Length: 237
Image (cartoon, rainbow, N blue to C red; front, side, top):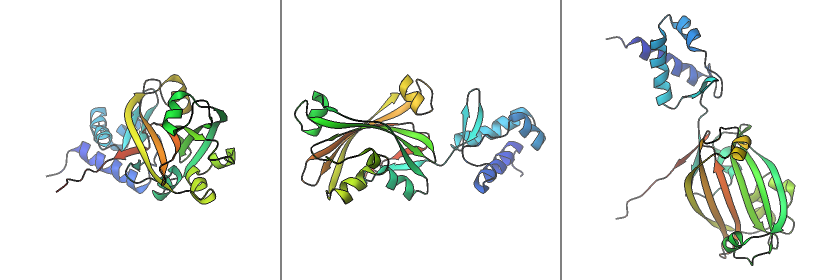
């Protein structure tokens, strides 16, 4: 028995995405154009496209159209690696844009995270992390000045972990992370090219060296447009 027409069209659209005819991030032809292309009704086209939406291949943007989704970069919470390492390993192009780079006294909350005295000097750095030139993460990170006296804007435009391990000769042991859902504020939405109120993931982490010293406190806001989080739980026997 032949497949229903909407399933045939869905298969053709999926094949077009896999072949590169419809590239990630590009606008799909309108329903009217697809109707003419396949000589079917609008209902049939909508049923076909719904299948691709359910398979996470398309995303609808109100007032703009339907876009082909880029494959998501997977974030492994159990393997500590830098953003550049993680994204590059999955065949994507990572880059960073430093928004602020300041030295300031730490408040009580940050002092507690970094095991410092309140008022000690810290670097306060905000970076946009981009995947294939599209903003995906806002990173707000705090590092002790006394530990990294030569930290520079140029370093923060590349890999922080590379600087810590290869230039400072320190060994990173672990990152303690807390994750919870949040929503876009006006500032976040502007920086991350999103809408106010859209869902985001907030991840707070404290990085420690092998000697137990905390070396950074970071808050990351993930847009989740190009990132997915995967967790694997092993049963203990």
